[in-house]
Image 1 (cartoon, rainbow, N blue to C red):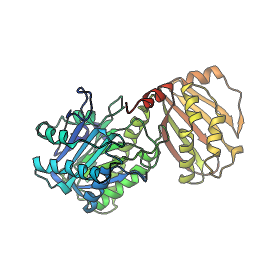
Image 2 (cartoon, rainbow, N blue to C red):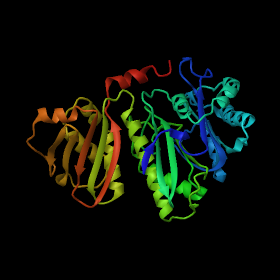
Image 3 (tube, rainbow, N blue to C red):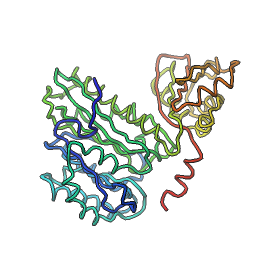
Image 4 (cartoon, helix red, strand yellow):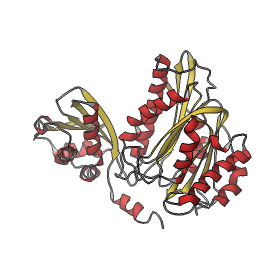
Length: 405
């Protein structure tokens, strides 16, 4: 497998665009994106577990019931959530606008929105902007599309890889947005994945659900699970690889490549957490099961006290054991080892649940880095899980204190 350029337009047959139509007040910020496949696609999506779901998710779930799609339209600046029947109507209108300007049925269009909750979306500006949006479709359009879906994001979230499947090069590309309201169980974000792999809707759906569990669902920025989370994937089969319709070696190769893409995007989201200064990677090993390791790793990265300690480069490992303890996971605190690692070094701070004599100055130097690893060993089994988060800074409060206004 090798990385390549192009994001969601890297795979054969995909085009994208992004424009400003007036949903956002700042004319310098794009707010409407379109992703298009020249051929019909197998398609699948995974959605937020929040009981309050954005109106676009309701429409997308209906449209993907047959496992097929050909286009994605998404706006930023307004989440179209808690907007009732009018919001559902507006989400449907967005798909109809695509069908009016492109050779596709509205039922084959995925729709998504992100932004402020509880405000009706003015779809008239979307309708007016469709000619420009469609005209802008291009192989280089992934750049504009990724910009159009950003809200408080400060960095691009885009990746593409090429993997040989059955001796044929297959490309998978992705863009995503996510910076705040990020928490495990569908990670509070929007992700759009495209591939030219030939694969059945059933196998595509299985692969997506499998990899989301070990990537996006192991990310947390602030503990808030959003209403509009969605990761979707479209596969148009234009690579010409042997058709994947069962769990064989070709499926495994595709799944592994998809997992790599999703893990890398998940890490980008954690790194770009609102106000964040550090990416935190937490690995819990020596667990009796994957579920136990995952619960503990998530508990650590979501702890506000752990996150603030990382912001201050403070090796306060007691907060880590505290966070583990209230996950209600059954482990023996008297067997736990804790270490910190970064490109600046490695240091052990806790052995068998008790403190080690270590240099606070050296620990601070190690933790004062843009990427920090928390390593926990339970000494109880063979299972291991990694989760990703970020520190909690003063800037997070500033950003969210006036988000709507």
